[in-house]
Image 1 (tube, rainbow, N blue to C red):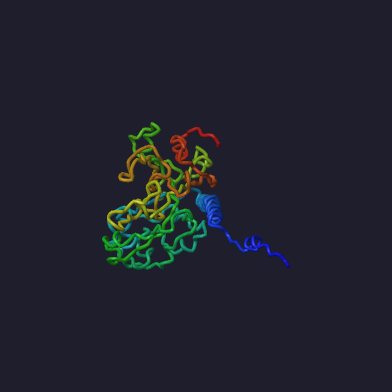
Image 2: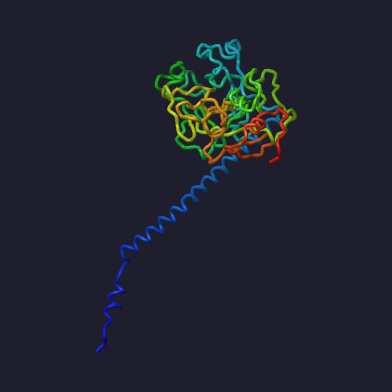
Length: 357
């Protein structure tokens, strides 16, 4: 008679015990915990690389502009009210007196033909302000342009920026001025990159600069003179193109961000043309912020990077922001950069001594 080993047979049918199952779950959880940060870091590295490529395109576009025009574009120009009346008499009554409504496109608009944005550029009349009815599509009052004229330019948006950042000016701003029907949302193209025009006194005082004459205008793109078509030539950047910032990240528009947290806008949807918000006409004086409290985000101090995305470098990359310099090379400025070094990189003709590192 064959003997059956009941213990062996019973053991072959046994499954995982509760302890073994918990051990497996713990191992899987540990692996996920170890791998997830690596995956997230790899994704951010890819986004940062794409962001750097965008800035590279901006740098090359500005070089092509300078090569064609023999000067860099002005950060802004304001038509006089007399010029406005002559340019478009029929539309003149629509214009508010504010200088913000008397500007054609700034630097980012000027380089569109050199950054595969020629199709968009051709839709605008460059001899009129940006918000002239001939340049604006409906629902803008009297708008004659097509909606795709205000399409987002992919090279102007950093992929690390949260996708919920709006491009519209809400229902409040243009509506209260009578430029759109009541309650109608209006959109202008936004950007995460801005040209630097100079230094704000809040930052100048941090390094002992004389502030009696106000903000400086000696940034790479600090000239506003388009009347004579004479702005800055590359040869006049005496500090060296490779040591002078051209464009810097100021990401997150049309929202306000303070050290990673959003700040409510009051009143709601009150987004101001050419002011804080990130349309193509912006150009910045770099400010210094204290970074002490979200209750007073604009408090002056000596912190520069990733504090507040109003007139100061700001990104959603860890530890710093990407910039493109005058020679179209892209670099990364860390949050702990020395204020003197940063200010020296903003000026085009300050004569500061910087290393090549």
